[in-house]
Length: 335
Ligand code: SAM
Ligand code: DTB
Ligand code: SF4
Image 1 (cartoon, rainbow, N blue to C red):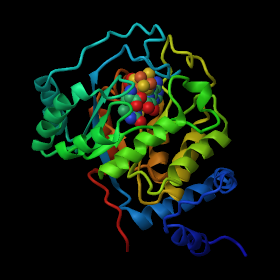
Image 2: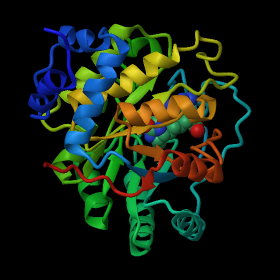
Image 3: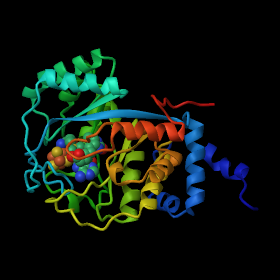
Image 4: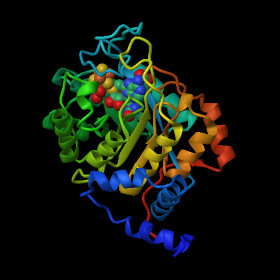
């Protein structure tokens, strides 16, 4: 039987059922599909679950920069590497709120705040709560990424109104030791369990282009999809290579492989927001358009990520206009 749009969309519909028992081989088989078949399948699932021309926009702010005790091999903020980064103490609440106000004016709907910490200390919880209430009062969704959390800390952040907590698995279980030695995969999973138990939405994904193989990319997605609930938000970062980090100079990823990663994430986590995250500064408009077709429906918006550059906001507004994309909150829908 030849493949027609009708019989190709069959499995797409069946796959909108949420599964948490993916096998590595099944995910690798998706990666290995001919590119057009993979994209058609991912896009069909995307349409079954979301309004396909709506993309969520989040703006990032580093609220505490540099001097991090962890040794993540990709990260410009690790104290283990000399990247020439200007360290900063925790920003005061007014400075953070002024940046959030600016992000809202530019059209962001979520404000994500990151700290170069290994873990949150209890002494910093009151400051985080004050920031969260202030940002929420502006009508923005709130997200933080502050390192590892205890169960109690996750509950306190939730009670202060934090909507999302970002904590990435970063890579596969097998490749993890090549990238970080100062905390374990299990540490990360534990924080994710605390976030989930608190009732906050989970934002968890990883980075590709770190010299890993396709099996590791499949393994990362398998870990995410096989959590008891899929993360509501799945950031897929393309490594931003920073001078001074051990991963500077690693072989560049084939851009089509990045699109495949987005497509497979969309297929196996059909109702999650999949974020085309760090690395857009090095992507053409055409590559980004392909990622939106493959199922990406969230981006970071604004000139800076945490410490590295992101496309100009004006460029992104123009890109959305050229593609007929509207910035907004793409809630999962069923037809
Ligand atoms: N320190 C906290 C932590 O690691 O959980 C929060 C901040 S950390 C910078 C947040 C995430 O940014 C990391 O988990 C990683 O996935 C991503 N990231 C850091 N440096 C990156 C880079 N050079 N390229 C792409 N993503 C990066
Ligand atoms: C995520 O997955 N990517 C963002 C956010 N979560 C915190 C961070 C990207 C950081 C890129 C390197 C930098 O700007 O320092
Ligand atoms: Fe620290 Fe986070 Fe960077 Fe790792 S990714 S070095 S934990 S700031």
